[in-house]
Image 1 (spheres, chains in turn red, orange):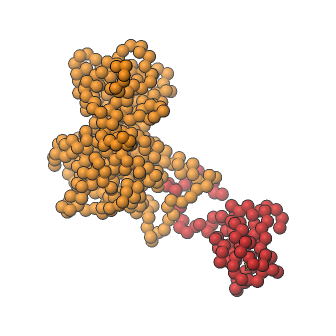
Image 2: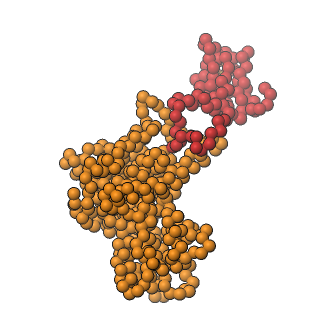
Length: 95
Length: 391
Ligand code: SF4
Ligand code: SF4
């Protein structure tokens, strides 16, 4: 994190660069991590529709993985997956 | 130009002379006349401003904050319950560093319902980050609105200010008010040009979130820095206004006959005129008494009190409000300001005029007599004129 002092920041809680929320990796808040198991996945897109953080990555109509920069680990994708193709693990442990 | 104006009308004229560009206010007794007079001035084509009608004081302040972020000079007015409803937005105004100027008519807080003078409403906003002025006359209302915009829009300050007037004693009492020429006021005030504003062509983020490890304490500390700059700005602007228009009010602390005083009465608002008259009587009887009128309560005139305390034997602090479970805020804060001094005057506190109960010259004389009694051992604040069964 940028360690600017109180003298160097703007007043009023202002953020001077517009649209910079993407630079803030809310995935840091995650305590549980969803792991995608490609072999079981049928690319039904349930998880893609239901993810509240738009963290399910889709390429060429295939579910290809999870964007851990923004996934908050809520587990909704695991709950909605009809094919048990997503498992939750505790963040910080090996898969 | 001289006009006969009530404190409410003076507030409306003040907003017009300051060329407030956006006004949003909700009517409440005894402030209603401010809103009505502004509507009159607009209808007569004399006041070019955007008046936003809203459904509550909370919305009125929200509208003022948003307009101020765009870069408009904004004005509002309220009283008592209305001010309390604004409380959340008051923090937003100071936190967003918007120089909104508001007139508050000091009215008692319910229950029981009371529309009469009492300063609890504004004292309860002490920690919202607003500059607080207390006015003694209708003339001072107009002059202080001008001064407040200059102070608030100073880039080193950028904070909102509320000016308080006692209900009825000032809001509904008319006196001759001298309105300086518009061109001279325009030159004195200039226009409000914030460095960063809400602008669709140059987007920024306002009202963002800060996690504990990020910037929250730093942003809050910057508000305190603005308040520290306000001390100097209030003094400087008051002096400059005096040199231009012939009227100044002592900056933060307005001293009256304090030069050789043994006892100094500390008070704020309309009762100060009664205190001046009482001082004249007491002086003619040989009692060396003066007054330190708290004109600005936030930022607190700490240094001015310490300077005054050097030559004074006792301070008699009058609060027209009371902090339940403690004591009047003026009483507490005067004592706190003097605490670091090794040689402190005796400080006595009196709660007086609560809920608009009349404060006469006789009331002030009895307080002075009471406080002059040697070694009474009084430390707790006394409620003046409280009907007690033992009396
Ligand atoms: S819900 Fe399951 S099967 Fe469907 S796309 Fe997501 S991971 Fe694949
Ligand atoms: S855990 Fe939640 S946030 Fe992460 S990908 Fe699944 S649904 Fe989205």
